[in-house]
Image (cartoon, rainbow, N blue to C red):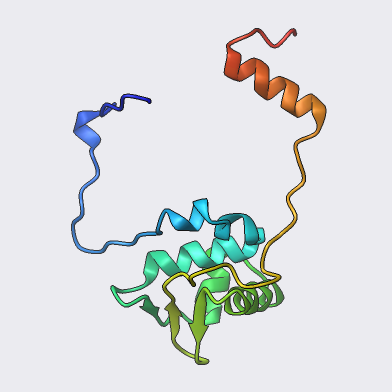
Length: 133
């Protein structure tokens, strides 16, 4: 087990006014892997700006501007998150929902393994071996 220590005691994070969180299940139960890049960007943004009930009311214009998304990309990402049961949207108000008990059927994305060359380099890095340049 890795023993952890604070690396910079002058920069320890603390909760002040706002607070956002993403449950660890988001990673461990495949929700992160199920999202496309723009869905992930929009989801993290909505988590960041939401209140304690998961509610936020940023307009699509503001979201597109801040996240540098086209309107089509925004709509596709929003609809993808709704389809994966991660957010609700009533036309004005967003709600980041509690994670569903299980990932909705068909929400997963087939993950491709790393190509052999990448796996080899990753293995060298993890084992502390020189990269052979």
